[in-house]
Image 1 (cartoon, chains in turn cyan, green):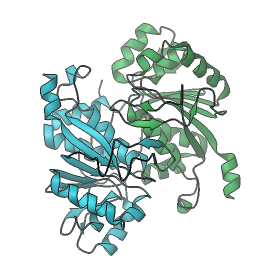
Image 2 (cartoon, one colour):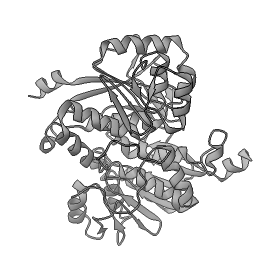
Image 3 (cartoon, helix red, strand yellow):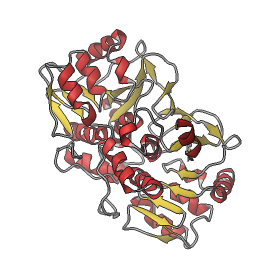
Length: 214
Length: 214
């Protein structure tokens, strides 16, 4: 039984980099790694998602606020992914012009079944031209920049996360939690998603509208 | 100006350990490291909190879900703290009976101006007898255990976080975010706390009651 579930796990890669915003990647990490298909068997079962951190190199990552984390894979060793999550943070400002990053993200975008971003991670996707003609969003303080710099992106200001086919982008920082809960819902239904939120004592997003006044 | 603020920073230690729940420590880490006293000077200023991860040894920590993090200090090198945060997770189950941990927490409890816990981190505080006669809470699935095992704790089931003098405990996992926003409010007022939540696009807790139905 355990073997079967392990075999069925979706492999999720979260791209990590220096000056990444902590909750941008830890929110989705938490949601997707604590999800259980059967809440009553939480302790003896695995998440249907296998979540890994992927960085450009194997060096220690220094997040915003200087938490030190060790990536699981670098660009070269990264396994085939089912889902890619691109988080945001100040570190995106230069990465969105780094060809090695744009190449990696573009290559993975062709491979995954679901491409997602949190916060200003959307600017990396936009810079890689993956959001051309796509409804998408970003941190509320970066919406104007997204509009100005990426004319082909259909910038969406009123939703907390935006799904457009197989691309889901989300609003700022904590919105990655809500987006991840939506990923759970998309794959395994609303009951599993709600049970995950309840386990986390997190207020489930009843209506997908931006949670702050811009 | 920057020097003065650095001098005034509150030093926050977050206790980390193997099998710690990721959002339990990353939630407060995010909130306290992105707080700014003047939102309009966010980019050129520091948080009034200096947040550090403290572990029993300097070994790499493997969280629940296997994120690998490097602590800033071990028990021996840990500097004087103003605030101690004790997060939860499956790892607490054996640590709450480990004398080295109880000794460290007890020593720090005498030193800090604010002692806090997230989720089942409260069980460690209870085991160290720091919650005797104190109103406190924990993850909703551990409330009964707290009542059964620690008869002297005044277990509180209806609040999302519980403040009793200089001890603040919180409900499960994501409640650490709300507790940390309350710490910001306690030190620097509601406006600064609300601005921090808005920066994170996080729904500010308008009323301190448990966010899920038990």
